Length: 198
Image 1 (cartoon, rainbow, N blue to C red):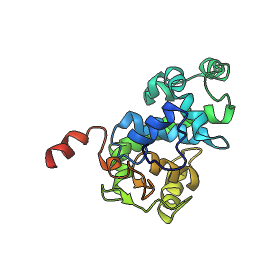
Image 2 (cartoon, helix red, strand yellow; image 1 turned 135 degrees about the vertical axis):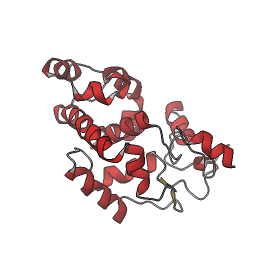
Image 3 (cartoon, one colour; image 1 turned 60 degrees about the horizontal axis):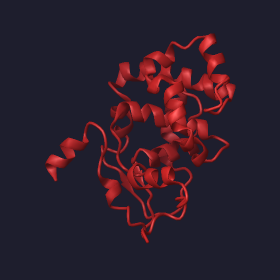
């Protein structure tokens, strides 16, 4: 039987696929980076499994996380989202996604992309930990404070550290997890470049 991190729910195929192929894998796909930032915020007070199970519903509801479209949502669209049983119908979290889209577009104007902004914090290389349970770090504190200054919502340090794990800025797979080394393979636009250099 495959040895995984003990948090991976073996009875949920979506969760296993997430653990095996996404969590801890360096991500450079701009749409996915924006998506995950919002989904981690939506998780606040809930389990990640709850959000993961609703991820496809979120993609449909939020125009596949097209930031330009999300930033332009009006009151009618908000009402539609709050009536959608496929997502977490929390008014503050729905509003945060729209606010985040606007802040994201401004950040991209300044930094070029969310990808460039985030990975500059770690010089483009993921931090490899040893599977210990980490909730926040000095780095997640710094990123959280900066994002808050930029107008993002639901980006506290705990949420940002979980986000860093999700997009592979840190690799926190347990030392015994058979997927620990696979998690180093990047996804997104840098994946091909990484493959060429290997």
